[in-house]
Length: 266
Length: 243
Ligand SMILES: Nc1ncnc2c1ncn2[C@@H]1O[C@H](COP(=O)(O)OP(=O)(O)OP(=O)(O)O)[C@@H](O)[C@H]1O
Ligand SMILES: [Mg+2]
Image (cartoon, rainbow over all chains, first blue to last red; front, side, top):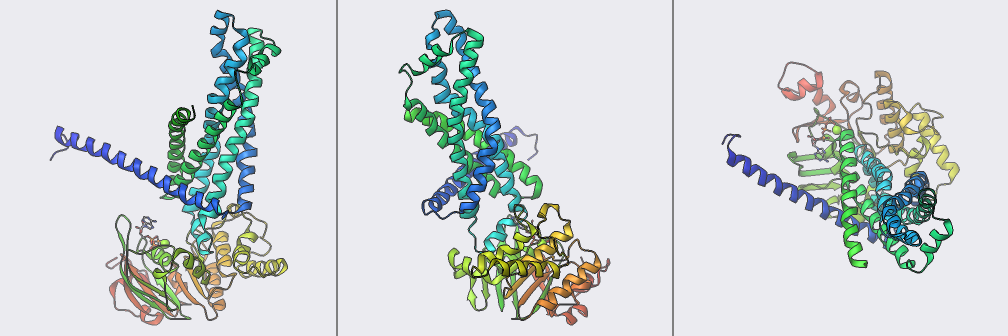
């Protein structure tokens, strides 16, 4: 059959869609299996404590600058978006609440996760992928070291913790950024902003909502970045492709999880 | 003794197509063959890093494929392996890379004993005083020699070298082979190398792989005088021939 035949093209399109779906479920299944195996090791405390500390520093501490910058601007952006409504209705007292609500529940966790995914997740995939192509993982296994306990479990824990802690900082900084933007753009006094924030419309539940999301985003990012790192094939170019796939999968997964977690915990 | 029977492994395509091979205890075995013949894949089966689709592997009488992952983890302590891609841990210094197997497998050694052994290994591979360097800062040949030092540091009874001399100049290459031979003791050694001129100066037996099969297995002398046209072409590096 010639390639130009419309029938052939149609077949190959269905084939391609099918193949893509198949590949996607293979990846999702692979990640689920990896997650279970890693959680099992964490549950038995069968993981490398030093590796955890190293990664906490590398992932957590070193992410501070991007978290600070992102968070300050996220707060300011929330205010810019709310400004027209606030001005139209003169609802200056509600500005703190409005900014706080969107920052704590949605913008803080989501944007922090996406920023950290670009840095920590990508780096994690590259590091693991390099270890695969240079046979470092095999070298660990030869020395009777379980790579999942030694490398993956500590990274997963470090990523989830990094995200939750970063989110706490980000919440505070974003609200700080929002307060400054309110004063600078709308002339809302800090006291008024703070009052809107603490008037009782927002409570710990809103903070917790964001933190729970962060934990899920961290899990998603950790599993995607580790999965694609461990699955690297084909030398250095393979590492590049894996980093790419890992970041895309993390981001996609984070948005999907965001929807479901928001829906479920309301 | 390492005994391999009917070993088959396919990834997308078959890579090992029924390997039968016996490496006697204490033998220094040279495994040769053109690129992509399946040499590295075969070595990874021997140390239990890969599981075959079919076939059996016995190491000192133990059936590798009957072992659980946990038993296998323990069993792997018998092997020292220098990987084709060096497999040095980038986040550890050269000294810590070499010390790594000792710290894992010999928890009773004191820090001083470990450092002494690392020193001694570095001198043996002609890299004295390089403890504090980081692996990415080494040249290809230096990495290779650190890999050899790490493989041998715990003195395992079975040693596997995948291209231990690739990227080394002829003199360093000969030195590495001489060192490996000198230190072999009663260990069983399998060595893959493309540097045939030098490899064959140290081997007891030689096997040649081609397209996932062992097409020759014999003493070094038999390899050098073989009438098999593939072996003859490969061993003598001729351009005329079936390869
Ligand atoms: N993990 C893997 N997944 C898929 N294919 C693989 C894998 N490892 C090896 N192969 C394939 O198996 C074949 C044999 O590879 P192997 O590394 O054993 O060759 P080799 O004999 O060691 O070659 P060289 O001398 O170049 O190192 C190659 O075609 C390779 O692409
Ligand atoms: Mg090879």
